[in-house]
Amino acid sequence: LKHAVDLFQRTVSELVLNGYSVNTGLFRAVPQFRGVIDGGVWNPERNSIYVSFNQDKDLREAIARTGVKILGAKGDSAYFIGGEDAATRATDGSATAGRNYRLQGKNIKVAGTDPAVGIVLIDEKGTETKLPMDMIAVNNPSEVLVLLPADLTDGIYKLRLTTQYTSGNRQLKTPHVISQTIVIGNTTEGDGDIVDDPTA
Image (tube, rainbow, N blue to C red; front, side, top):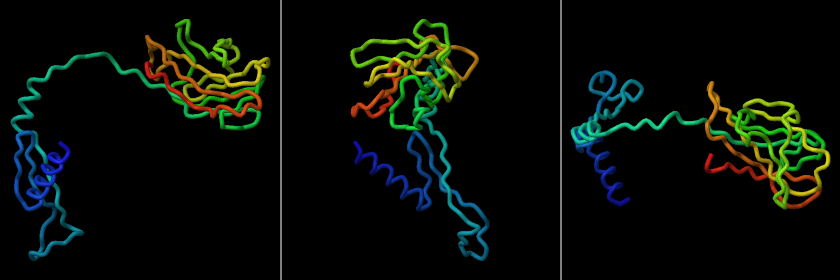
């Protein structure tokens, strides 16, 4: 199939660049020239070639048969682009218990009425700790600054942020869920991977 497509494209290109008008049924390609050719001499600074494309019969008929189904407005995506330990300025996923951790991303402001909305820390045993909203010091669409609990034990945690925020004047019906791995203490595991929930 790739060979056939490549051959088709090469043939159309060669014909058009040799001055032919090519009609494929889907489109009509016509070579055109810009500029006045003075004295029968081509001047690249004043003259140029371009190709105009117009939809043809087959494509027009296909368009006429096409129906449109309105599925609703597409929700804005939300994702992390990084994180920073406010105590050490480290951006490798390490964090300090009892200190602020800065999250950066797009549409990450914690907002909405769904019970799941908020920030949750999940330890290696799967125990979840939801942080009170008053532990979020900065809550902006591109930056969230959260105070980590002082009693966190050393280990690897998943920081999960759930929000219904969008850039418009409405809230998402289904919250976005995004997560990032953070490491408390001197554990050697973990790399601060950022993971987007594929269902969000």
